[in-house]
Image 1 (cartoon, rainbow, N blue to C red):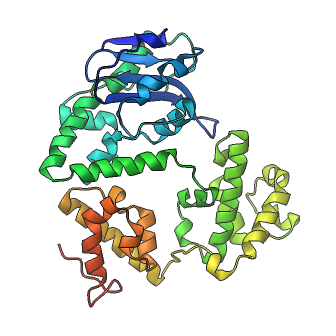
Image 2: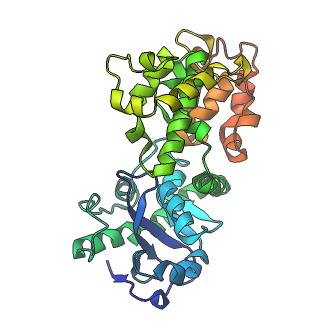
Length: 367
């Protein structure tokens, strides 16, 4: 498609209305990905390619970009990087991936998949993993980058029409606002362990150690701008959480322990393990040990979310995400756990079902 590689911020000429926006970045070997290109397109005209390496370019385009609503696809990392690069993001960011997950049960879907399914459009993804840091960028890279914003307006419009037929327009915009706020929020390091597969099955005594170690790893990774798993892998943290060593010798005693890395951080790791052991029972995470009632409740809630999503055409992972289901499985009320837009779609029925005379311990899922 037609595109312009900006060499002067003043040449950015965007019509009124929302702008389609995407970025190219490198996430390898970094905690915070490095931004290498911003692609922007208005409701008409060419795609503008903004090079953040050009001195003064970001400052020059900042006000023009922030004056519009944005349409993005799977924009969490884009928004995080642009908040840093521009100092802010607009109040309204419309995410086509989230919107698509609120008119159909399958989620998440790539931009290429949604364009093919909803618009019959194919896009070339051959440059996805090319080197975006090199200069000058190759013509194929520029064409690829421009194509990522070529059809976003049309895709949003197609989803929006479907949303209107489902009376879901307001819900989708509320969900996009929620996702925008989540993307630019500072994530607590104490929540880092929630991204680790398998952590639900640990006992509370082991889970509190894993949470403490994951928080330490996150702090360390942020400080040196490296991926968290490059400090110590998930497998190592799980092993330490299960063994809970208290001496340097026992810390290094694991059969597959990376002794050099553990030795380098031994004092910090032992201090965190001791800190976790001192936590009172009420401060330990709520978990789902195998065979427990909580595990059974969580499985039932997951089935509820999936069946309702298929029936009502929304994604369980958007409307009833795992973190919400876990809280509800431990007895929290849906109205206290879910955002208003999530509750509107599923919370009332879930509340009624939980309050039925059979309850969650032996539920019947009405279809």
